[in-house]
Image 1 (cartoon, protein in one colour):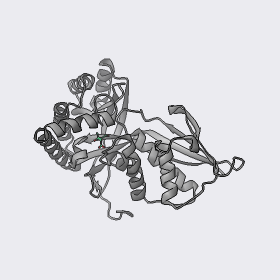
Image 2 (cartoon, rainbow, N blue to C red):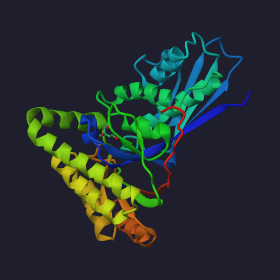
Image 3 (spheres, rainbow, N blue to C red):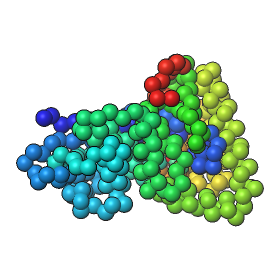
Image 4 (cartoon, helix red, strand yellow):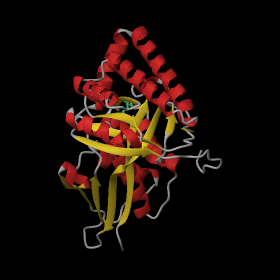
Length: 324
Ligand code: MEV
């Protein structure tokens, strides 16, 4: 039997991170240039039910039963088996690899969960809807940080640009023309759990002040949705710039991120901001064909560890989605 494989993309947040945890809208896009991949191979000669997990990027080579029950990979596999009411799995080797930078705000944990859910259900000969995949991966997200909004697992599951509000149906965004961004890695690891936790402490101490910032971000996301849908890319850039200033006021940026954001703007980007939890990880710069090279060079000159060029794909309004 050949190996069963599945993959899922990385992600960026165009607008609205952090505020989205508190119910404000945000916009996210998949990044297909980096992906998590899972392949599952039956091992008929292994003891019954034995599952070997090999994930070289995190130095993992272990039997499933030797992993702690709270380990995200253990939890993903057992929650798929529970969901499908399958008591015993055929012996197999699960190989996980990923080109998505870890702890960099690009959704690597969510992408591994989604790819694993998809590969495992296919290996078990069952099918699962995107909505069910999204719901299962949301439960795994809670291990990474306690109060996920659900935006990361949603954008990674659906693989398209989404307008997301916690607890609501995901809205499709019409993207009349594709547009390009550079994703620039500071090389500084960022822990979503600790940044989200610090902001929660600030919110508990000064709720009125922080709520005003969340409201302003929510308003920017709404305007950005209109700017995208009417192909006003320069306007989108301005909204990204404003969003970054508010993220600075929330205390989730860093001198390195601010420096790269400034460098991108000076070199001609329409707009630039941190993307994801912040304090490290990645920033994004909205560019076009004419500015792409010069902005990329400026970012490397100012300390970027890696720059990925990505494209937000054009998308028409869909009328029939199977699981909405
Ligand atoms: C992380 O990619 C985005 C945050 O808003 C957290 C979340 O939405 O769960 C910082």
